[in-house]
Length: 98
Image (tube, rainbow, N blue to C red; front, top):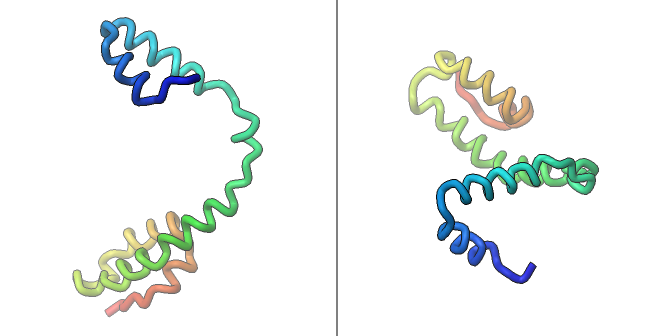
C-alpha cells in the first residue's frame, strides 16, 4: 500500500456518507478477524513497564488523600485502587488513617 493513512483519510472524507459508512463497516469487519500474532503476544513485559511507569504517580496521589479529609471516609476509593493497581501499590503509599 503506497498511500499514507492521512491520504486515505482525506480521500475517504470526499466520499458520500453512505460510502463512508460502508468503508467504516469494512474496516471494522477486517479488525474482527483473529490475529495469531496478537493472540500469541506476551504482554507481561508491557504490563510490567506500564505499572512501573504509573506506580509512582499513583502513590503520590494516594499520599495526598489525607489533605482532602479523613482517609477512612475514602475506603471505597482505596479498595477500588487496590483492585485496579494492586495491593503493593497501596502498601507503598503512606496513607494516614487519621
